[in-house]
Length: 636
Ligand code: 28G
Image (tube, protein in one colour):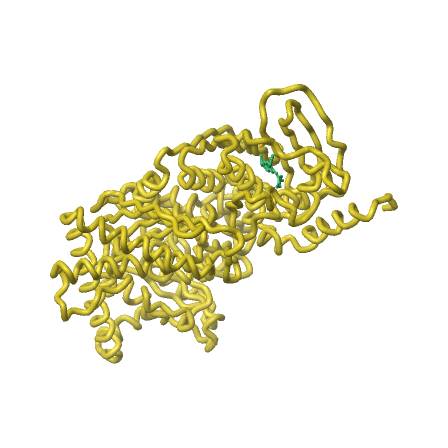
């Protein structure tokens, strides 16, 4: 490359080179998450423009060539010449840290990694096309190969409109996938519409045509109602809005009759998955308000200990949205997803405790319902603690011996090397026991009923024999006591039938892990075994192939020269020990699916829908809300 660059353009290219060299530094990762980050960057710029009061609609289009277009109806990115002699828009797209908006007293609403947006997206795209309507004309400019090549800014037709359209093509040599997920984008856009009342957001998928639009007049109330879904509310939606200094806080809460808590927090419209000062302030304020009311109104005796945070959050759904000016914005943690700004704590705590104190006085009946629920939760917590202590005391009791008798242990002394198969049914358990590699594979057959943990408190869960056995066997305790360091296995593999609509036990186990041992899912310990659906063999059994789906079956059939026989497995029980080992348990041949949670909100919502009796939706839940990552890619 021997092109002539002036000094300022060399700097520019170096800037974007840095992004291409270490994309993770700018967008977190180059997997599907990082890929979606490109959309968030551009969408956030479009939303910022609308929040500044210019335009009230954003359109997102997933084009069928895997490019993404985003349109706003704001002022249009400035096209006039920057002091360096190149158009401002070109500076914004090719110069690092000169993102969407800066200086000028504008309120930058995006948090965390945002703010370097447009140029980072350009650096990681093979092509970016801009169409800007501004100053009475259309303007076009394109960037190629991560911003390495730039077309001239072209002034086009006259127009009375204003706004910006950005189309980018993610670079397939950087991202492990360039396939955008409609659902992921819809979820985030809907969230933006909830958090910015009045803003209209549309999404169009041209690959497999879909269209949705979101616009909420009272966003926070509609957000908590959305999170409530089909759960039964025991309070009205309660909302608070206030600001102090330059910090604005908006909080919405609603109580429902389930035993879960769901708090979703945002800073400057960006999810703070790991919470932070705003969330801890909220929790402290909520606990204080409830204890104050309970004591003052004799719902708790003066001598009684205060309710704990977990007690008062049972059945709570909350949305916390806080806006903080750039200069005091601080994030913590590896993923920069935890708010650090200290001022946010006291402000949030005061808003919720004062607001709730007032609300409680105005709504006595509802308040009594909320507080009785918290008291019941406390009682259940104390009862569960007692049950756990007794279980621990009785280590050598008769029951304990029976429990551990179910387990066929592995020989290895190294916990992380061991795998445990949770197997449904006795006959499959027997085959698994015979077929396994005894050095590192343990088998725990599940016979009895697994309780639906969505509808039970910890107290009842500990009474359920199957779950109690699992808890004991895994060795890391349960619920708030869960401690990953105690875990006795490196892989926990759920092995159930491949082809039943009643994959019920799978769902029950996943729900249990999700609610009571979530770090196991978050840290990638939970897997699902994939038994094959078909066995194809010659009549003399000299040639045997297995297939996991129709596609695999067709491939397998092509391998046969002689007459063959196809067996369709109806359940694990139909496989003998050797077959089970060869197809489902042998680490060199099996297909394991690692269960991860990509989307807590959706999982929460749909776990509830599902476990609240909707049988046909179970399959959909597995497919849509738990992210299946193929662990071993064994293909026949
Ligand atoms: C469609 C997808 C993404 C944007 C604007 C509008 C302005 C702007 C963007 O200015 C530079 C620095 C501070 C003023 C601002 C237009 C003021 C006047 C803008 C977008 C100039 C950035 N006229 N719309 N950037 N500022 N939309 N949508 O990115 O001093 S970025």
